[in-house]
Length: 454
Image 1 (cartoon, rainbow, N blue to C red):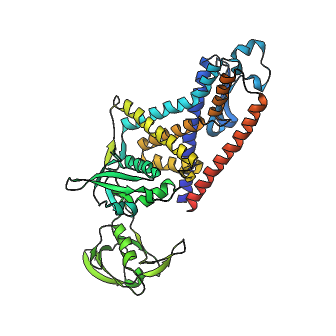
Image 2: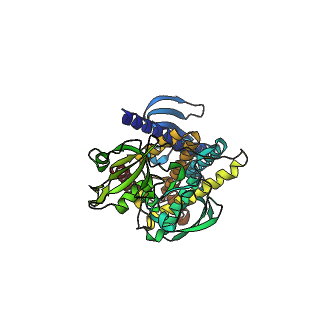
């Protein structure tokens, strides 16, 4: 029942997200077309059969349709049929080329405007976040010498204020595959530089895999070394461990967090090797001997494990990213510029093969992220809307026929050659555009499903 409810919530928030953003995108085309003297025949919120429709004083039919995943604008266009002589001045293809470019460009520009507005509202409301404090350390972070409790100050010279900033900076640095200096301050106030050797990472990793290989977890999300439940028939059951036990030490080595509790047995365990666990059980200290048992992993390898799961823990935000209404204006533009440059850089890396195509997400991921951000609060949902709005605007500007960028490409060719492309050439372009778009969407769906399965 809980899974069904979560699924329905995800679908609902995806509908809200795409409905709002695509409709705003289409409103950009509508608004500029009207000001360029183009007659708009229909402005529809949603697709399919209209639920309700009415005509405005301007002669435009306004519709609300059954499929609430966006909208569309239908303009008077000679390519779709004969245009009465009295209406030719208001027909789209007869307009000067600069006006046609303005109408097509308006959709992505309105996505950009929406993103700035969303980031401004997010900053005024205040987005809760984690301070960039280091918690559990493993993989590259452990090799670099990161210590629990250190505060990250900058990544490759870029200042870091929140854990979100840290995650974005590390993702960018990882794509470069070069050693990256990270400045940290320890509990004593001393400043150190830790170097993450991203050149050791394999090529074509997804963002999620990069996070795992980096090995940094927020201090606020570090799990205590408290047993949540036991694997039936495991070494833990045989040794007499119980849910709620806090592990204090293993073979005399202090256990600070769940990461230690996982790594120490893996490092010391082996055939016929017995570990001594010091526990706190309800305020009483006791010692138990545990002999880890071989466990087969999904990749076919074997490791020795105790057979325990962590106790669920709730992380609480400890900082808020907030600006006053005036100060939030330049900050919103800076946020938009930063995320736009990151998105363009990622697209460029995927096209050149230096970034994994696994980073491409589809509707399933959008639905999951929409639901998760909505549960995190209004500010986080606005942040999510801003990111998706930017992505829609940028994707629509790609020079793929049937997208806005493809139409702009046609108009640029028309400017150069002095006449429009032939209908045959445009038809071939449309066909190729549909094929390419279907391939991209298919890859995005594949990545979504692969994430769920894995």
